[in-house]
Structures are given as structure tokens and as C-alpha cells.
Image (cartoon, rainbow over all chains, first blue to last red; front, side, top):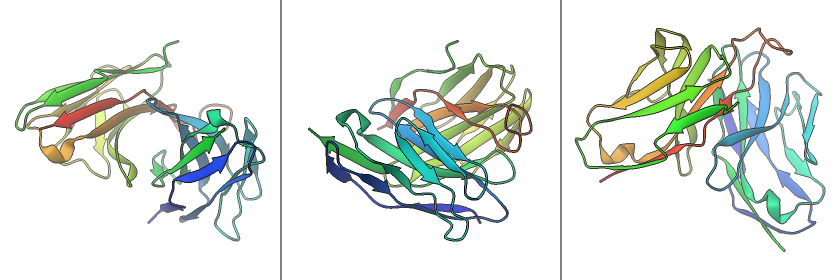
Length: 111
Length: 119
């Protein structure tokens, strides 16, 4: 079946540090891949997405590239801010609309 | 547009009590979903609906029922609450696959969540 594996958190960084959150997936066919972000006390918001191999999704300084050969969709940001502190979920959609989520990675950024 | 709204935001129940969570969306989306979020387990799909009057089971449907009598509303019911149903519940909606600027997949829009505690 389809599944998503994310690195466990929390990830603790100082402001302006480089961020990588790893995500790998298992899926039949050609899934679409997503990163969602959940700020404290809020619902999930779509951060970025990619629909085919080698696509790069980007938003708010975050980037992720759809790597079919390594079945990965790692999230990166060159310089994190305190306001980026949140839980990040990697997800895939294959075939029908249903999203399969990873377990989430909490990011804590200190000043 | 309010997007996706959920009522209530918080609720505490005793074991065996019943309740209904309401989800409403004003984006004219065909598809709606109910998820639960538990620590270390991400989000798991409870039930979903592909249109008014239709519902289907997701990954963890036991102990829940749903109804979609109106396109904009999706109700999640707990007939006899159990402590294992303590969770944060999220509703989401999306357009039908194949619609929108990018066919083949679509973004799901989430509500702010309902925190439910069953004692």
C-alpha cells in the first residue's frame, strides 16, 4: 500500500540555520506529493506540492524536489525563522483524492 | 470566504455519551473528509464523501458515523464515545479530481480542528 515516512522530531534549530526534513514514500503509480504545515492551535495548511518527477515545489522560502529515483521529497529552507516553528507533514495522493500522511515532524526554532 | 469551519472547537464527553461534530465549507467543494490526529500517528482518514448524499469508510471508521445531507455540510457522529476516541478531529474539503487548474490531484483545505476528550 501507499505510505509516507518522515524523520522523527523534534528538530531544534537556531534562527537562520539550514533546515532539512526528510520524507520518503512508497506508492504504486505516480503519486502527487505535498508538504503541509500546522502552526500551534491551527489546522493544516498546504505549504507546497509537486505532481511529477523532478518537479520542485516552493513557497515562503521552503523547497522540496520530487525525486522518483530515491522516492523522496525532502523539505529544505536555507534560513529558518522563529515563526517557522510548527509541525510539518509530508503527504502523498495516488489515484483517488485520499491523502496519506506521514507522522509529522515538529520544528522548534529558537532566537 | 470562511473556508472550512468546524463546530465545536473543544468538547469533553463522558464514556457512553454521544455527540455530533459539524463541518461546513463555503467553497462549493464536492469532496469532504474527516480525519483524526493522534500523537505519533499523523492524520488518519475516518470517513469521506464524494458528493451530497454519499459517504464511504476511510482507514479508521469504527465507532463513527457520518452524513452529508447538504453539499456544504459533513457531520461526524459518535454514538457512544470511548476514551480511545480522545483526539483532535479535522475536517477537509476539495474539488473533484480532474477539476481546477491542475487536474489529477487537488489540494485539500482543512478546518481548524475540534479537540475532543472522552473521560
